[in-house]
Image 1 (cartoon, rainbow, N blue to C red):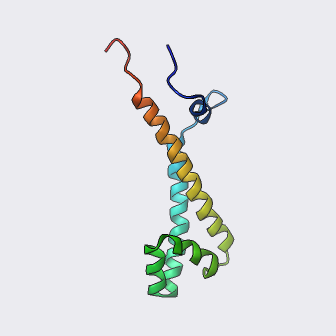
Image 2 (cartoon, rainbow, N blue to C red):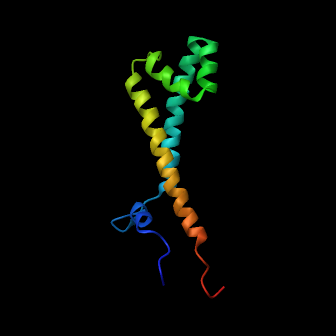
Image 3 (spheres, rainbow, N blue to C red):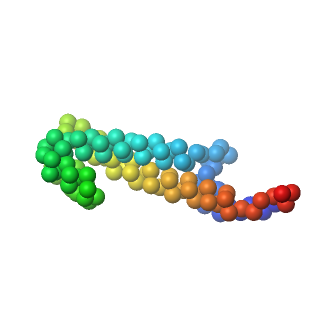
Amino acid sequence: MLNMCTPALQSAERVKGVDVPLLPLAILFAALALGCAATLLVHAFRRSVGTGVMVLLIPCYMLFYAFSQFEHRRKGLIVAGFMASTVLAAVFLGLGLHSLSALASRSPPTGF
């Protein structure tokens, strides 16, 4: 039987013959990004209501606020965690959904 998956997809899903669960990794990194974003948002609302609303409603302002006005003893860890987790969650979500679409697009076995 022919394999319908692309070689890049096979290498992303399998590491030395072991299936790598990509969607749970995406959920894990999304939860980590959400925790870091919540820390930024709480800090912004404690600073002022206007700053908190801008961080909440203007997407790029959260990055500006994180680098310029956010003052926390673990600023580097929180900002790096937010940035890296957001990127990794997006990558794993894209790869995981791509593998699901590849599975859904396969034709069913001939016995059905």
